[in-house]
Amino acid sequence: MDEARFIIDVAGINKSFGAKHVVKDLALRVRQGEIFGFLGPNGSGKTTSIRMLCGLLTPDSGSGTCLGLDVLTQSAAIKRQVGYMTQKFSLWDDLTIGENLDFVARMFGTKERKPAVTQALDELGLGGRRNQLAGTLSGGWKQRLALAACLLHQPKLLLLDEPTAGVDPKARRDFWEEIHRLSAAGITVLVSTHYMDEAERCHRLAYIAYGTLLASGTADEVVASQKLHTWQISGSGLQGLTERLRELPGADLVASFGATLHISGKDEGKLQASLQEFLRTTSLSMSAVPPSLEDAFIHMMQGSQDPFQG
Image 1 (tube, rainbow, N blue to C red):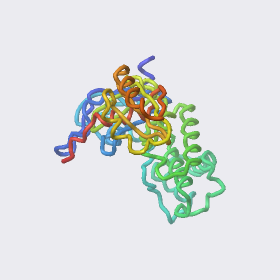
Image 2 (tube, rainbow, N blue to C red):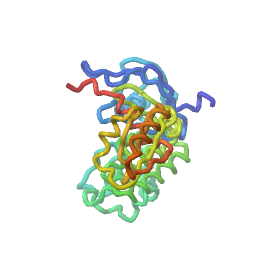
Image 3 (cartoon, rainbow, N blue to C red):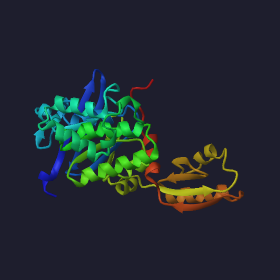
């Protein structure tokens, strides 16, 4: 693909806060119109990474561009073209929806402010609630208002930090439909999330653990990179077996999935043989299943240790 189509193209990006090296030699490319997901444990550097890519923080070292601008020397110019939606609702509860958007438009110096506000209201389905106080909105409607505010200055890049935390499933689904509409219109979206179903809605993903990029690619590519083989164990009497299964030769990961257990490992033959022997005297059944994205991420998390703990 033509490199000019990479909205973000960086390498060797580092960031420290005091003695904490929170992002280590990050290298990443994001294409125009792509929805790129960031996953990882809390405190792993996801938000710091995204903010550096979008010009909201200046890296300590490294090189690269965002929107054709240098991430080290032109961060102020980059952030003027970025819409940033924080996890915590940050607009004003005692203003109406319309007043909030008008105020944000003033701050951005938006030309033709009234038509811009009306367009944002209509596109996010907020027109009928224009005069409702923001503080009386449910989580899903607050989310729509926050997204509308992000779009007022017509950004080329959206940064969404845990955007659906605390939002009901229908509102989450509606939100993602809107994100895909924006992507189809050419807007590039960086989103951090803890939800596996949301991660699978992204075009590509990056998994960051304590400052280090461990894997990136499509969901299928990330799963394949872990080279896991997974079996599903089902039947009555699963309770209390998790710890015993973890001790089996070849078992790298045991996790509950509803009424079943998933056992994964990289040595297919060893794990299959030990499972068959373990289950021989039980009424439980085993079947090979494709490893899931959640299997892959739990496996990666097990191999990562927070360097700032204890």
